[in-house]
Amino acid sequence: MKKSHVQLLETEREYLQALLSKGRLNVRVQKRALGLLELDKGKSYQSVSEMFGMSYPAVHAWGKKYQTEGLNFLEDKPRSGRPVVLSGEQKAKITAIACSKPPEGYAKWSLRLLADRIIELSITDEISHMEVGRILKKMNCNLTEKSNGA
Image (cartoon, rainbow, N blue to C red):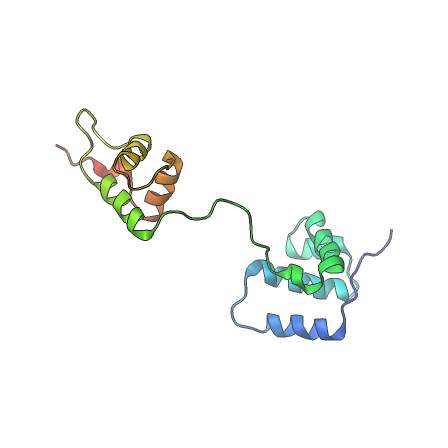
């Protein structure tokens, strides 16, 4: 079986060691940097994956990415996805609505009912009930705690 490893340049090795000596470092970056240093010592992808509790394909990908991108692969690339479109003020209004009395005929707010009300009040043009739930969760607002015995 072929032993898999990476050959770092001396400057790259010094950069990684300096990076690891910093006080605060993202865990993913730290694991990748430590993994590269271990691979540079001649350890196999399998032994490094076991050392860090990672899958073999993940560690193997580190080696491939290092070969193509150099040390730039240490940091995560920006991820695709919808950008945040709600301001803090809009989120506060959503939370205030959730804390208010529900509409006539309802015992409590539901996420779908809140989403409809938010659009009706023109706080935002569109919002899903799932996004309303995420906002309320971040604000520690629980819709089930509204029973006050009345």
